[in-house]
Image 1 (cartoon, rainbow, N blue to C red):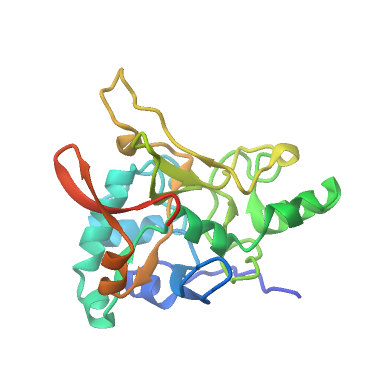
Image 2 (cartoon, one colour):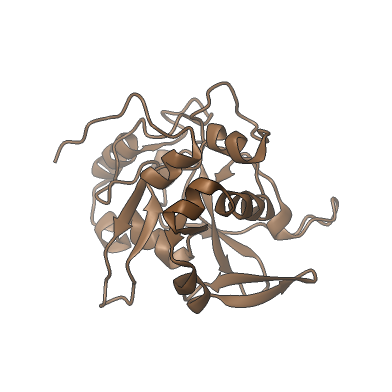
Length: 245
């Protein structure tokens, strides 16, 4: 199946976040409920529209993915986003995806990927993502490569993505690959996390890195509260997903 490569992406405003959600169908076999996920990474234009600043390391184009944002920064963005008139009118609540939702949206099994030859893997990565061989070791505007089968862009390469799933030691899971990963060692199924930065006195969820951005999931508030668990984070009570959610 051939996809049209989008040269101009509608990902500037809060309204564009709402309009560019993709419906992921329910999968009873793997206990995945129906949910909505962003076709695009959150862009610098959208971050500025909500937060009024741009923390990104790579700048110059408004449709570059926002990066250099911590998990805590993302939660602040989401809190403000959910208070906007557009989101309230749409009747949605935005959040970060759980790790399982992110991999479900990737729509590529490790078995299928492992069955590909190196040449086929290289072709897939080059068509759908940014890596060290084609990125110039910088981020690129969202939506410039082919989407995956779900219709999502930049699930491979560009930047890694924060999730709302916590490790047992309170590290936050990060999914995916980024612009400087080598194509021959590409692992779309990688999950990772930051270690606390003792020198700066930062916990893992406070680390800011130019390799990490995020995309959003939307659902009804009652569904969100039913599938999350309250966690105490430095004295602040928040709802987060565990890895097996």
